[in-house]
Image 1 (spheres, rainbow, N blue to C red):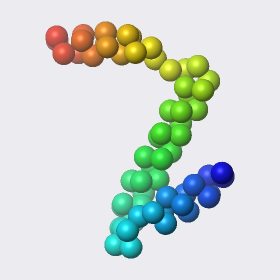
Image 2 (tube, rainbow, N blue to C red):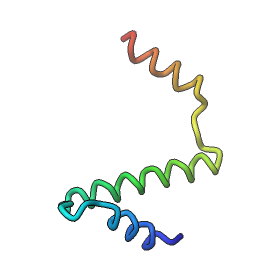
Image 3 (cartoon, rainbow, N blue to C red):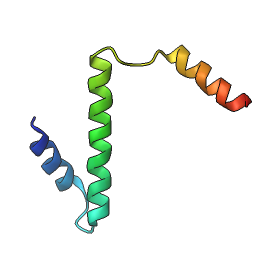
Image 4 (cartoon, helix red, strand yellow):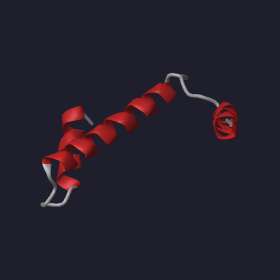
Length: 61
């Protein structure tokens, strides 16, 4: 599916009352998810244990 097809499908799934801001927010969300999935496919993810350690450090400061 092309980016244009994904954008059109995403917009079609929104309610008729969706504002420009709603449309932009949903598309930005989809872009972020697709970017994250692409990075994971490329092996650029962060191990679960590393994330847990980082959160633990944030919560103890």
